Length: 86
Image (cartoon, rainbow, N blue to C red; front, side, top):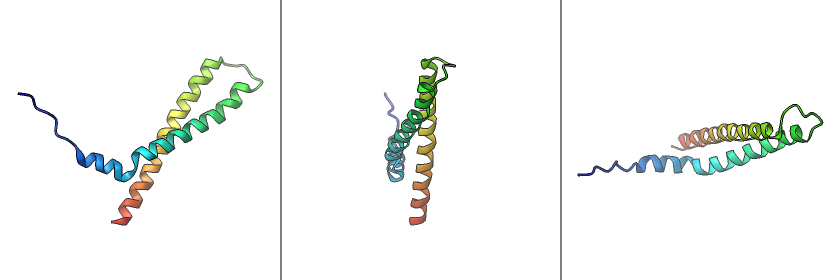
């Protein structure tokens, strides 16, 4: 006898109401742009203190961190707007 986990339609509707998917797309696009902008100057600058691989790793961490932060902030703004509507 197999027990299937219960579906969680409430969670899916909650995420859809907050626009989490859209917020994540916008947040990570912003994070990528910030990372490219900030690491471009470091890679093409006159200093060669670190290897290019270190700057690529730094850019990745910066993109993910900025993307997560932007996604969080956009989702909080969506939640506040949704709370004020009801």
